Length: 352
Ligand SMILES: Nc1ncnc2c1ncn2[C@@H]1O[C@H](COP(=O)(O)OP(=O)(O)OP(=O)(O)O)[C@@H](O)[C@H]1O
Ligand code: NI
Image 1 (cartoon, helix red, strand yellow):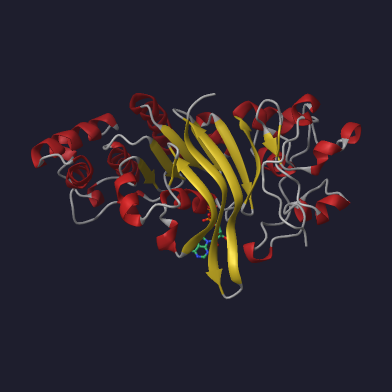
Image 2 (tube, rainbow, N blue to C red; image 1 turned 90 degrees about the horizontal axis):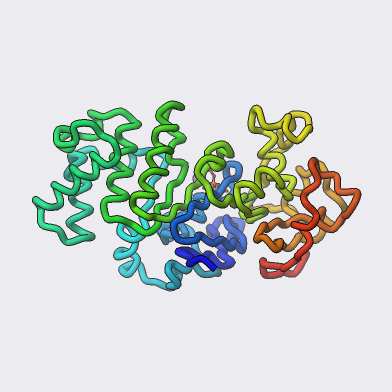
């Protein structure tokens, strides 16, 4: 079995509110193999960013609490680390880029100074060498005339250029894992494609692993090795790109795929966008949390939480329809051989 860079084990993260602890991720388990890209997809508010911030332990600063679970990075649990230990890992072995490049850059320093600063701190480089490497990084992320650009301030650059600078900063220390949270959402479409290509190319060159968060199934199809689908704080399906796109098992995944223009015809269904909206996390529905919006919901779905079951190929889904047999209403009927093996991989909770 391939080596894992990241193993998230039953991670529950919450926020203390006037309604008590509200869970933003509920017993999430995910793996990333070395050199691979995992994409987390799901609607707004499903807990994608909270998952990423928990891995980075930045959630502590966002008012969140990791209630339970482990985040193993190269086998070491990050959840039990103190923040001063995290400082050696964050920005060095694991780096993160966000949607808005401007918020990641300091307006009062030149872009070269900001990259060089990171290299001085994490790699202990002398000033000249840090500057040389900063310019080199700007070249690697495709910024023309990097010697000149390095002396410019963020406001002198376009959004796309700034995101390249942010990527240069994130990769300068040669991290083992890059977490990118909607890295292209704030950019125009043509620039989006360039930034995605750049990330793909740099991932190879730097031999990194990547956790990419997106609400765009098209982006996931392009860059992911595996895709994890989150809904209202829970992992509902996980598999290879082919498993998710060709043989989706969870009706939520089927709904997400059907809302991509141009794909809906392929499985013969009519254009179907998911009705309703994601529930407030303070009031997650009983049983399967997707049941109020699920076109195929059965009685069992209202009362019993479906276990996350894994097939022989490693395709995981949490859906009671896997038990239905011949009358399976899902379009394109998921491959039955693939749904056959059932291993509960989410700790059971007592049902209300
Ligand atoms: N600092 C916070 N305090 C309280 N609740 C929060 C905080 N940050 C996030 N949440 C809640 O946690 C839930 C998950 O948020 P998260 O940002 O992870 O969603 P997401 O899947 O990344 O959505 P989006 O696609 O909009 O970025 C949301 O209901 C959100 O309101
Ligand atoms: Ni988010």
